[in-house]
Length: 308
Image 1 (tube, rainbow, N blue to C red):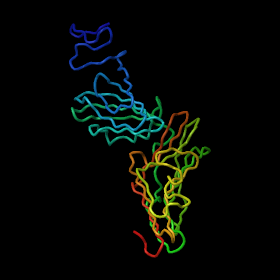
Image 2 (cartoon, rainbow, N blue to C red; image 1 turned 135 degrees about the vertical axis):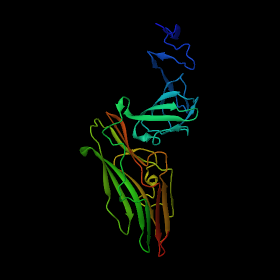
Image 3 (cartoon, rainbow, N blue to C red; image 1 turned 180 degrees about the vertical axis):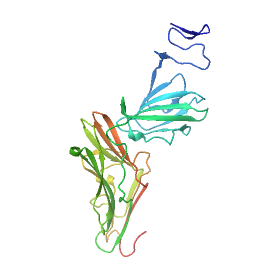
C-alpha cells in the first residue's frame, strides 16, 4: 500500500521513496539494505548506500566522499581474526580520538556529516557478531612499572650484557595469562616481574597467541648472542602470532672482539605494542598493551670508557 502526503505519493507500493527532494534509496521493510563492499577504501556517504559492510583482508585507509550536511552512513566492519587496522581520512572525527581497533574484532561505526567537510563518528566494538564488547578478557593490560626500555653497560672483562624482554604464558588452570617483564644487565640482574591478564567466563578455548609490533629493530656490533639481539633473531617476527611459552627478547652484548654493541627498536607502529589473542566459544578476543615509550635502546661496551 502506497503512502501519500497531501495526495502525493512519497512511498510507493514497491516500498521505494518518491517525490522527496534530496532523498533517494531502496528499503526493505523500511530498513536499509546492506551493501557489501570488498576491500573498499572509498566510503560513499550517500542515501543510496545507508548501510555498508566491509570484511577486511588487509589494513584499509577509508576516504569519505559525497559529504554534505546531514548525510550519514552506518559502517559494519569486520577486522577479521588477523585484527587488521582501519584508518579514516582527516575529515573524520571520533570523540576522544579513534578507538583502539585491536580491542575488538567487529565494529558498528556511525558517520554523520556535520557540514560538507567534517564528519562526526562514533564506534561500538563487539568481540564477535552479536556479542557485546564487554567480555571476560580485559581489553588492555599494562606494563610493569619496573620494566625499562633503556640499558647501558660497560665492563672491562667478560661479556657485558643489557636486556629488555617480555614473556607470555597461558596458565589455563588459573584462568589467566602470565606476562613477565625483565630488564637489567649482567652487573645487576633482577628477577622477572609478573603481571596477569585474568579472564572469566571463557569456554572452549582453542588457542591463546601472542605478538609484538615494531616499525623497525636493529643491531650493530656483536649480533649473534644466544638470546636476541632481537626477537626476530630468535624466530619471532613482528606482527606474527605465536603460542606456547613465548619470550620476546632484546639484548645487547659485547666482548673483547666486538667492543661496542647497540640494539634498538621502534614501538611506533599503528598496531599495539603487544597483543594477546584468545579464540574460544565467545569469539576471537583481544587484549593489548602500549608501552610507556616508543623507543627501546640498549648499549653494551667492552672496555674502560662507558659509551653514551
